[in-house]
Length: 222
Image (cartoon, rainbow, N blue to C red; front, side, top):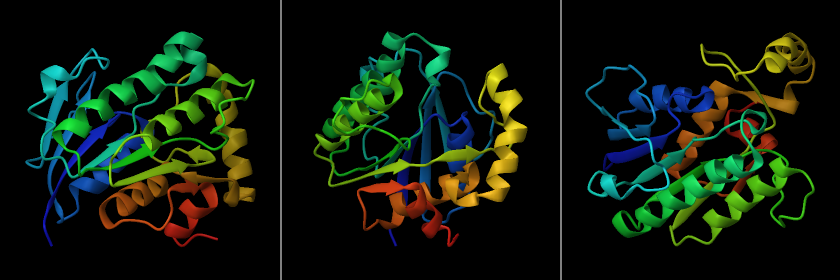
């Protein structure tokens, strides 16, 4: 089996950090390039970290983005952290800037997008979150990558050190955790989601869009 070169974004986030940890332990992974605003702090011979501030201009990274076999895109922001305009820029603009350059430097790459349940592919929702997440999906679908996958998890339960920011989430976490124990099918853990994304990205999958129930099936969960 040929070993693969992986590009990951959002590796310091809740899901991205779990995906990175999983990738580091796989023999079929040759090299991992992590692009982000800050480094993860992980020391590993497989990992090369690149700090970059302007995600709308990735031309300075052009050489680094050659011969990428798989891109796992976990870069995201919570809607309540930024303005509507900034949320769209981060969710759609950053993603498009990367896919545009990757289509030139690594046209045969597999691209896996960390999306969300409720994304509106028709882009008609009155909810900003659903509309913009749907727009991001559509931007990916318009690309020429031979394989692309979209993951739409429900509630994501944190198991590691990284947790979503914000006081509201901190207050709700005990309640959400309790409900998740009662009704686990409503969501997925960050670790299980990351494992599913990596598995499909490297081995291929039968679906274009993986809903929460599909993600649970990959992990052999009911």
